[in-house]
Length: 622
Picture 1 (cartoon, helix red, strand yellow):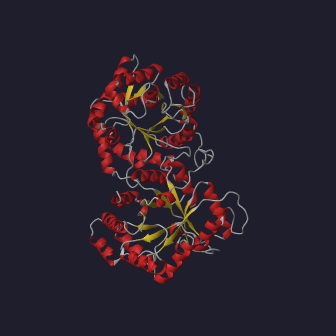
Picture 2 (cartoon, rainbow, N blue to C red):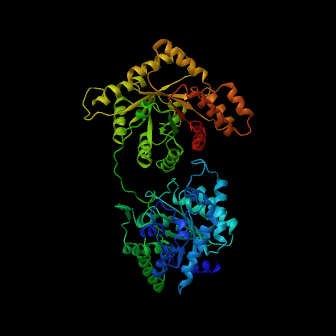
Picture 3 (cartoon, one colour):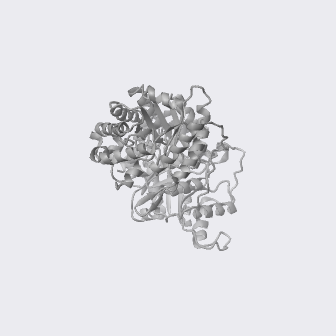
């Protein structure tokens, strides 16, 4: 282990390339558990290791990237975790010992394959124990380094590093995050934050790997190196990019970046301050051989490191053309009398939506049918909701319901924004008045509006959906919006709310969404009163459900938001509970159980982005 650190301090060192795509190139399906091949087909793994050693790699990574309990359980292999990891180390060591050169073995440790709270339902302590389990098996065989790689969540890599330091405190740690084209992690963290976090955790090497090709990772490495080299005892830097964006050709994935291209970028990586260079997905022994030639040349002439300024905002991303969006499925679900499960998310305060998009992926896996996108909730400045709705639909293939307030928009702006949303594939709308600016970040902002929600519903259904604007001028192809409206089951004036709701229905509303419900008695009373006057409600209703996050949160909702009413028994239960979050989830689940016979769907509103709470609430439906 000391020998490995000494080697790093002597100058640049070459790591190997892809393992997964090399296994796939040898005829193994991506559906197979690659880590299990350490046991069933060890010669395949040895063949990959030997090819990289022959190409000139000085570090080879074990085939243990996904050998943790969460990933192995998908293949019913969790009981073989120890032998899979130990075999992975032994195979890499065998390939290293066969060489006439000194070859170092780094144990590959990847993400768990599940999201940590609040985006997912795995706690930090559970993640820590899972990493400990894998690293203990690896450390028993003895490795030169641990390489925790391809992480998108700083919280998750933190648990991996802490586990490594507890189980194998003397083994050097290489910590690599993955970055997207916008030079941030998939959860939206910038390289500056990644560098500071990893340096504070005390790892030996910080770096980036996977996701994108050399050109996109170069500015990231420049930033990481700037932080690493700011301290005389700071960590070293590593980089292992993909061979560009993959393209599918028949049953195979083909990566476009050539070995010569990688060789050229190896020089730039060294100039940027990298010590460990190598490849990730799509790279081959040919790529490593080309990089070997560059490192040999650098060793002969002496390596120079230059500071390259990073463009403000990170790497420049190229515009990606929008893809056609599939027609809405929400109306079909209601027509087939399926109980629809929806969840609300708020747009980010900045322009980076990666974290919200990743949350939407997890919500889809948890069983939610559709995501509601709030528009400037509480009148606080956020990204435009229709932009986030488009990004979620494009990147997760999960439908959205765009909240579309009339407040603060004139009729010209309203129609322009609607056409833009439709062009981006956003078809489901929830038309509502919206929160007044006086309660938000810009109380001095204008509060004018040309049209009320029922009027906008009529414009959409009678004009835009028939191919013309509100002035009767053709817009070409008709829109196909599916339009929802708000309903309040706890109104200060019951008769007025029923008449307003009726007006929205007559304007053409397709469905309705309610404010949070804690007590179903007012819901029954509202629906009965509507039936007495107009007959059965002709459109499906999604009942709102909100799990208070704490007593303080419950009191705020009750006292400061006039549209939300918590019964006294609800507040008392929150006061008596030792765990406000769990009690809030319990209250929301009880409301949902009672609501199922009254409504056609549920609309969960998690507080403070606690999407794991939303998933726990909806388990009642399962």
